[in-house]
Structures are given as C-alpha cells and as structure tokens.
Image (tube, rainbow, N blue to C red; front, side, top):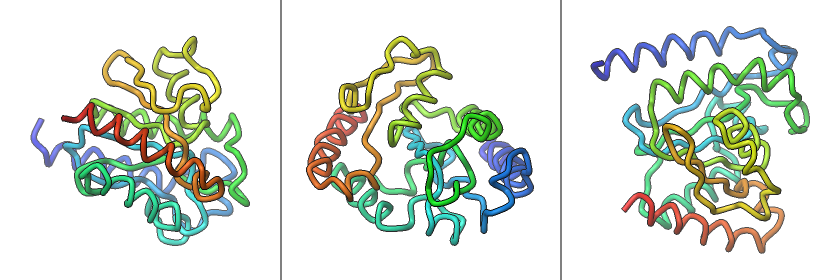
Length: 193
C-alpha cells in the first residue's frame, strides 16, 4: 500500500478519536491526543494516557516527562520524527488517575489500528499500565510481572517485540529510576543496530 494510503487511514482514525464519545473521559478533555510520528516507524512508544500539558496541546509527551523522554531518545541517537508515539488512552483521566477498565476497552481499538497501520517491529511500553495492557492483548499474559522485575527485558509477541520501560514521568519523581531508564534505553539501542 502506498504511503499516502497509510496516511489516509491514520487521518480517518484520528478524526474518529477527535469525535469519540465512547467513555466519560470525552466530557472533561480539552484535546484528545491521537499520537504522532513516522508512518515508517520501526519503533512505537506507547504511554498510558495524556497528562495535563498533553491535554492542553493535543500532542503526546510535551511536558517535563516529554523533555526527559527526548533526552532518552537523544542518548541512543533517535529522533521523535523517526518513531511513533502514542498512548493507550487518548484522553486525560481526571487528575492523572489510573485508567479504568471501561476506558481501556473503549480506547484500545484505536491503538490496535495504529499498530496495524504502522506495523512497528518494536513496541516500547512506557509504564506499568501500558506494559500490562499490551502484554495481555498480544499473547504475553503469562509473562506479566511487576515492572520492577521486567523493565528493559525483551518479549516476543507474534508480530513485534515488546519492551517494558518505567514511564519517564515516574523517573522524574524517583531520581534513581532515571539511571535505570537510561540503561534500559541502551538495550533498545542494541536491538535497533
């Protein structure tokens, strides 16, 4: 399929997300955060849900955690324009609370379609919720353990690898996790070489 067809599919999906009313999060959102990046991305990063600044700007990872995320990408020679970046939920939960089951079920089909369109080789799950949901949905349920035990490990799903990482926002509040995240990103660097 030509690149323009993939672009059209993503644009159509984005319109669906912008008009979505499948769960109560639509009532409080400022802007849904669809995701962004390269249509040819071999690496997709999937966070949990938009935060305050993401909700204001309609873009993923634009706050303090976004700056640290960019720093992590730069540390392994990656640029945002070469990856695809999105979240499990496309709307911000109030006060950044954990996603609810019904919100995940309402929103996951959008992520599934993004994955089908982009066809990444590696999906990096940012945070424990993202890790759990992706591993459950892609046949790795038996491998799920607390993120403290499996961050930075590479798991083989059917069509791609999944690597759980601590969420960059979590590392901002737990400075010792920053170094762990930097080391885990080096594992990603080895995979893409």
